[in-house]
Length: 97
Image 1 (spheres, rainbow, N blue to C red):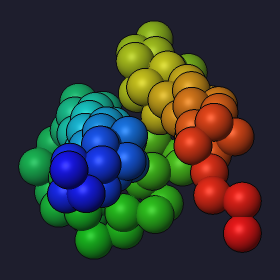
Image 2 (cartoon, rainbow, N blue to C red):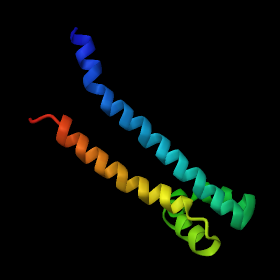
Image 3 (tube, one colour):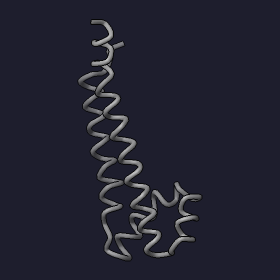
Image 4 (cartoon, rainbow, N blue to C red):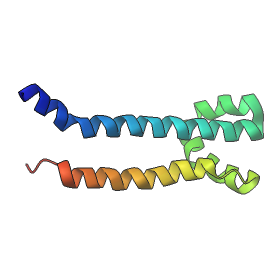
């Protein structure tokens, strides 16, 4: 019974971690796709090397230059949603130490 309780207590954190990983992968893939549309394969290679810059600038560039707003929606919209969900999870399931 103790094992079941410990697994049940860790389930929201595991689900949150899996969702966070999926969001990061989707954001990065959409950014690389936006770079591929503009600069081709060499741009994708540079985008992988310069990942922090890509993560910030590429969604804005794709939206303004090409009208491809999905990278911006996924990245910053997902950031807002995850911030709210993690805050709520901490409030509901957080340990009072």
